[in-house]
Image (cartoon, rainbow, N blue to C red; front, top):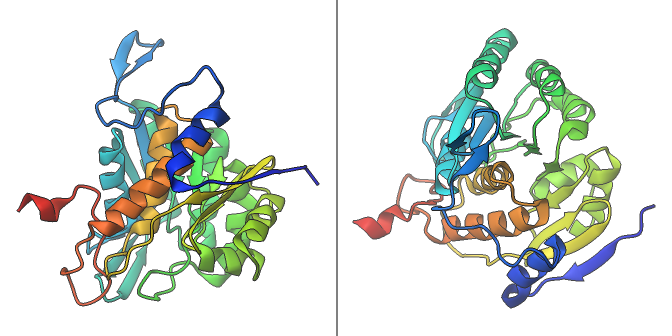
Length: 300
């Protein structure tokens, strides 16, 4: 087994430790939304970083591709989507799911990659084995930094991944990922009960290069086969957590698109998701209100 460095990060030192992880030559994290442009030598022009979500639609706007696109924008990326399924969904639950044909999903991916280009991507709710196979086939031929968010159950309790799709998810997508980001319940479903620091190791043993287990205890647990540490996360009381996992993984993908290293991106994504929960729209709907990366309530 690879020897791991295990570090606990206190909140006041999180930014310092991520800077040290990146090396002495890097003195700050590029976290400000105004820092959007980078040089693309192939075209000789400056272009906004491009992030793609491969996931499902949430008609209520709280999670799924809707949450992803908002998170991409907040993190300073041009957001794109390849939709694999449609859900009839609100804050209280999911009442129907319409799976799209795999061939159409592939057509969406081709349209985006062939014209606009992709700097990083994330997957979310993929629903079925045949959709996972189609996505994995395409990404294997078009490798980009990839965040795999193994969405299995909605915050309302609705099942979002068919039972026979779990094996395909692990076997086909984990090896293609830069990092996988299950929440505590998803990690338990994938690798069994255990402390988060044990679960991240098991996830990497399944074939993921790195793993982050979110939503448990006082922080997120990170392991990349070498470095293991807890990323501190402020937890908030209240009923506005719908879309928090999507916001985390989408922010992480956007930061990878902007060139952040994985550990720095993980720390920023954790803080962003926590802030979105703190400013969540708890008064919307009868169930778990949606998170809010734009602080819309404060603009009224």
